[in-house]
Amino acid sequence: MRTKRIELEGPADHVAIERLRGEATIRIDSIVREPRGEHGWLSWEIPATAGQGELYRIAQTIQRRCDGVTGTNSDICDYYRELQRFAD
Image 1 (tube, rainbow, N blue to C red):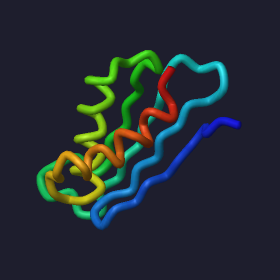
Image 2 (tube, rainbow, N blue to C red):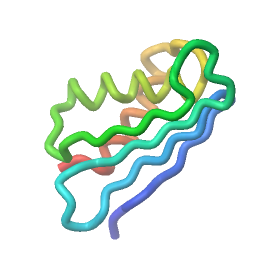
Image 3 (spheres, rainbow, N blue to C red):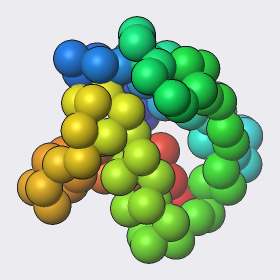
Protein backbone atom coordinates (compact mmCIF):
# COMPACT_ATOMS: atom_id res chain seq x y z
CA MET A 1 0.00 0.00 0.00
CA ARG A 2 1.14 3.51 -0.72
CA THR A 3 -0.24 6.97 -0.12
CA LYS A 4 -0.59 8.93 -3.36
CA ARG A 5 -2.40 12.04 -2.09
CA ILE A 6 -3.12 13.58 1.26
CA GLU A 7 -4.99 16.75 2.19
CA LEU A 8 -4.20 18.68 5.34
CA GLU A 9 -6.28 21.49 6.78
CA GLY A 10 -5.50 23.96 9.51
CA PRO A 11 -7.29 27.04 10.81
CA ALA A 12 -5.78 29.23 8.06
CA ASP A 13 -5.08 26.99 5.07
CA HIS A 14 -5.71 23.85 3.10
CA VAL A 15 -2.76 21.89 1.62
CA ALA A 16 -2.77 18.94 -0.78
CA ILE A 17 0.37 16.83 -1.22
CA GLU A 18 0.46 14.40 -4.12
CA ARG A 19 2.81 12.04 -5.90
CA LEU A 20 1.51 9.93 -8.74
CA ARG A 21 2.91 6.45 -9.40
CA GLY A 22 6.08 6.64 -11.46
CA GLU A 23 6.48 10.40 -11.05
CA ALA A 24 9.80 11.80 -9.87
CA THR A 25 8.23 14.86 -8.24
CA ILE A 26 5.99 15.69 -5.31
CA ARG A 27 3.34 18.35 -5.98
CA ILE A 28 2.13 20.63 -3.20
CA ASP A 29 -0.89 22.94 -3.55
CA SER A 30 -1.67 25.42 -0.78
CA ILE A 31 -4.63 27.78 -0.43
CA VAL A 32 -4.73 30.40 2.33
CA ARG A 33 -8.26 31.51 3.26
CA GLU A 34 -7.33 35.09 4.16
CA PRO A 35 -3.93 35.81 2.55
CA ARG A 36 -3.02 39.07 4.40
CA GLY A 37 0.11 40.02 2.50
CA GLU A 38 1.04 36.61 1.06
CA HIS A 39 -0.04 34.67 -1.98
CA GLY A 40 -3.45 33.08 -1.47
CA TRP A 41 -2.58 30.20 -3.79
CA LEU A 42 0.86 28.58 -3.77
CA SER A 43 1.77 25.54 -5.82
CA TRP A 44 5.16 23.95 -6.24
CA GLU A 45 6.87 20.71 -7.19
CA ILE A 46 9.93 19.25 -5.56
CA PRO A 47 12.02 16.24 -6.50
CA ALA A 48 10.96 13.05 -4.74
CA THR A 49 14.65 12.63 -3.91
CA ALA A 50 14.75 15.90 -1.94
CA GLY A 51 16.96 15.75 1.12
CA GLN A 52 15.62 15.72 4.65
CA GLY A 53 16.71 19.33 5.22
CA GLU A 54 14.74 20.52 2.20
CA LEU A 55 11.68 18.52 3.28
CA TYR A 56 11.89 20.09 6.74
CA ARG A 57 12.06 23.62 5.27
CA ILE A 58 9.00 22.87 3.15
CA ALA A 59 7.24 21.47 6.23
CA GLN A 60 7.94 24.80 7.97
CA THR A 61 6.23 26.66 5.13
CA ILE A 62 3.27 24.27 5.10
CA GLN A 63 2.87 24.49 8.89
CA ARG A 64 2.94 28.30 8.86
CA ARG A 65 0.43 28.48 6.02
CA CYS A 66 -1.92 25.87 7.54
CA ASP A 67 -1.83 27.15 11.10
CA GLY A 68 -1.51 30.85 10.32
CA VAL A 69 1.41 31.26 12.75
CA THR A 70 5.01 30.07 13.03
CA GLY A 71 4.88 26.88 15.05
CA THR A 72 7.21 25.08 17.38
CA ASN A 73 9.50 22.26 16.32
CA SER A 74 6.88 19.65 17.27
CA ASP A 75 4.23 21.45 15.18
CA ILE A 76 6.52 21.40 12.15
CA CYS A 77 7.45 17.75 12.68
CA ASP A 78 3.81 16.72 12.25
CA TYR A 79 3.83 18.17 8.72
CA TYR A 80 7.34 16.86 8.07
CA ARG A 81 6.24 13.27 8.79
CA GLU A 82 3.42 13.63 6.26
CA LEU A 83 5.85 14.90 3.60
CA GLN A 84 8.16 11.96 4.22
CA ARG A 85 5.42 9.58 3.00
CA PHE A 86 5.99 10.89 -0.54
CA ALA A 87 9.81 11.03 -0.65
CA ASP A 88 12.11 8.32 -1.95
